[in-house]
Image (cartoon, rainbow, N blue to C red; front, side, top):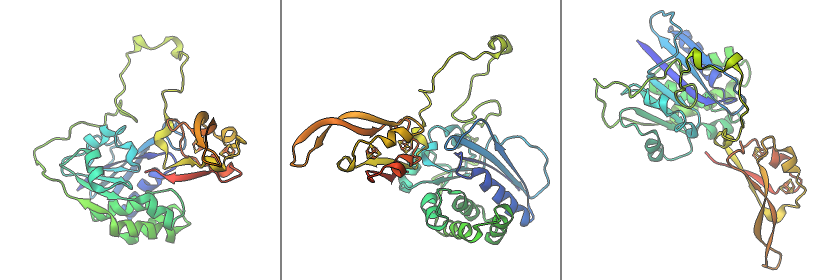
Length: 312
Ligand code: SF4
Ligand code: SF4
């Protein structure tokens, strides 16, 4: 028996820790396991992925997984940009998604009727038990539920080994996910069918295959031409989004000053004045294409005009 998995998430969500926890627990249960994170120049919130292989037999190949048995998605907004990994899942395999959306909607987004779909609101579970936006414990619980291993006691021990703190909180989150994750079976599985694609080792790092450039086309001395960060819309990284109550805003612009992504903007708006009169004035707004939901603007606002509202 050999299970190959890929875990898709964002920097700071604990996907590497999740694979270490499951690997550690699987080893405690007598399996062989290798967790293989793939690092680049990621920063907090940027998409990242990690591979985890578990086997009953010893193995020593360190190849990244190409056609996973299980795909774990830490954020439903990654389904579209990382579709290549979902398409690479083996027919009859599992796609586990952290989401606040309804299972039918997630099924439509995933677009596969030949895999088990596992749905849970891991952020909500983590917030209640761990008081952090780290869905890794609940997703480890959902994984254990559908795979039938590792045992919950082994996951608890792995938290002890790996984290050494907040063990009970993390374990409570894992256990709740184990008990409540919703499993939707595939509509049909053709045992002879192949995955629709592969996770290529030369490509598909984050958002899809890159074009391979031959040595003759590489820029001289590897020089990089001037570019812009405008195409890198970081808005997809959000879990919560800022929402403003203009009636409380005194236009001090502290939010604008502290926003690390230049996502606080001023826009002309028609606002209702004290006696119901419409006033056209400049008001604070957010550029949701780039706001990554860090919440700094809400923290620094002196009047409480900005609230962070759950988005995924
Ligand atoms: S949450 Fe506020 S501070 Fe953070 S990126 Fe968005 S607008 Fe800027
Ligand atoms: S920090 Fe608060 S009060 Fe000041 S401009 Fe921003 S939203 Fe308005």
